[in-house]
Length: 270
Image 1 (cartoon, rainbow, N blue to C red):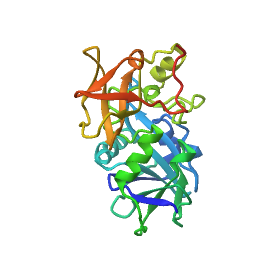
Image 2 (image 1 turned 120 degrees about the vertical axis):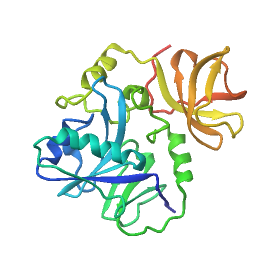
Image 3 (image 1 turned 45 degrees about the horizontal axis):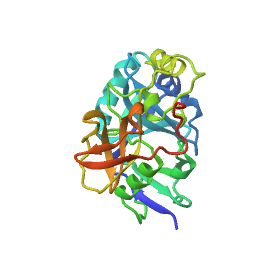
Image 4 (image 1 turned 180 degrees about the horizontal axis):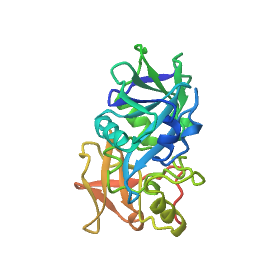
């Protein structure tokens, strides 16, 4: 039976108007026009220096774009988008009160019109935006355990604003960057990072020897900090980890940490 969970930490920002696709496309890492009814796009907005600001799923119902975004980020994101819109025919509105976000996996999604497969990995299932309540049989924590096992981020604390590079967080392998689209904010550093192979750390799942370690706890190797725990579900966590430390003995607050790189991740040879 499918598992369906509410995601109350997510909200929805609406972009309407004739220029909505062109406007957003000039600001984010992926091709916005690929968001069509039944198909979502995962993208990030970056600083001019190419560092992560916020990521979201882009839905379309044919008349508007709907951004599934961490609810805590909506005020700042809306303000930033309004600052960039200038004379573009775009209206920006927080519609979180009327549209709720749900996730479904291990089976078919509920019959909700605004539903799309999670564009990152088939195993992640589906995302749904619904005006009505959806019968749920799982929790947001169940969803967290599912995505952490697959090695997928969920905004902060997995991704650090003004610090994380997209390629550190799997945006390349998971289809969050379109390398052929036109210019967008932060594109130059993102492209340079890819073609020069400048990645020194990655975000990935790790297994803890026992649960109970707090998010944000530094990961140590030979007494030196080589990473940090991010979001946690039981004895699994997302962590940023230096690539040159993956084969060392790792601990966090005295608890052994074992990297569990997912099958989709591309790590440098050797």
